[in-house]
Amino acid sequence: MSKLLVSVSGIRGIVGDSLTPEIALQYGRAFGYFAKKGKIIVGRDTRHHGPMILSATIAGILESGCDVVDIGVVTTPTVEYAVRQTAAAGGVVVTASHNPIEYNALKLIGSRGIFLTEAEGNKFLKLVSLKNDRRPKKYGTCISEDGWDGRHIHAVLGLDILNINRIRKRKFRVVADCVNGTASYVSAEFFNSLGCSLRLINAVPDGKFPRPPEPEPENLKALCRAVKVFKADIGFAFDPDSDRLAMVDEMGKPVGEEFTLALGMRYILAKKKGPVAVNLSSSMINDYVAREAGVKIYRTKVGEVNITEKLLNVGGVAGGEGNGGLIYPYLHYGRDAFQAAAVILCYMATSKKSISSLAGELPRTFMEKRKIDVSNKNINFDKIRKVFSQEKIDDRDGLKIIFADGWLQIRLSNTEPIARIMAEAYDREKAVRLAETIMSII
Image (tube, rainbow, N blue to C red; front, side):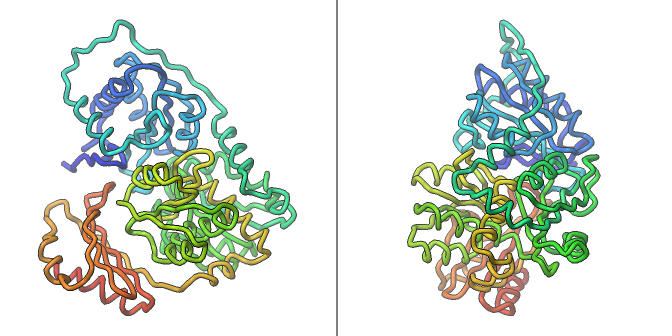
């Protein structure tokens, strides 16, 4: 049996194996106990087992005495936005985000509209193991409420840093790859509102992913072809719950997920000055962007909530993760693919430059990423530490070894039973060599 993964990224597992309706009910009930009272906003992505897991989760929440507002198949940032707008007690999104189709998960959102912090998560987990003897005086009620996806998109278009008229005047040609996920429902409305000529691919929200759902360059071949055929200015690739965004340039070449964050922050910092926060696994290009703007950059452990907490603590104006997750806290403190797409299009419109030109203005680095299955093995971090004992080491999230011209990191994933190896350098061969060094040690 596979292992149920419990972390700051939620409760995640293979449906019918480590994640069952019984488990979803148990965790839903515990989340209701955690929220104590009030309403909880719930939504899900398009996975075919989503209705089953969501129904069980709702049953657990209702059993705790909390009320539920089901807003349907929506993006994760839509649920975050709805929780913040309605002052709800919390939110649950049934989505395994970028994981393969056999996975599903419960992403848990607190009353502030952000994912549970580590302290909140520990408090919640203590409630999971309680015996079912806390019967409420009154069970909760459940209602359905449509239209939140449209409200969320409308709010994105009203962002204070955007110049919508400039975007519309450019009449961009755009291809959007929705991976048959939540972006399928709102992409047409969003891009048409921005005056774009739009070509949608993989936009049938049937939960059957036509490509691996993580928007990494090797998974975007269909989008690259479509951009060239449509002669588009840019291609956007979403993940199933639309919190991550990758780009393809006008020549049909992947720009790389790291540039969503770096370019997005660069545009925002030109409008607003203030600290930024990114995780330890994000590119050192972000350090260049911060230095260029004359602002401080903070590094955190991987996990959206860790960045959110830092932004809240330091009054940050932008941040995110190099996996295509840009955070601009004007609407909510979460990664938001549609918000990122609007920022990128506005950057192109106001600069009058192509996406390849904008990316070309930033330092060129090379990233090498590897994965190791750790379901039946342990990683000897002490051995790795000894090999690099002469280098600067950051051990807040796995081990990150920092060199003058690059870095190397190995960490356990929050969302899969794997260890992630990442290396970045200004020279491709060095990045590969660093990653292979870790592989050989393991």
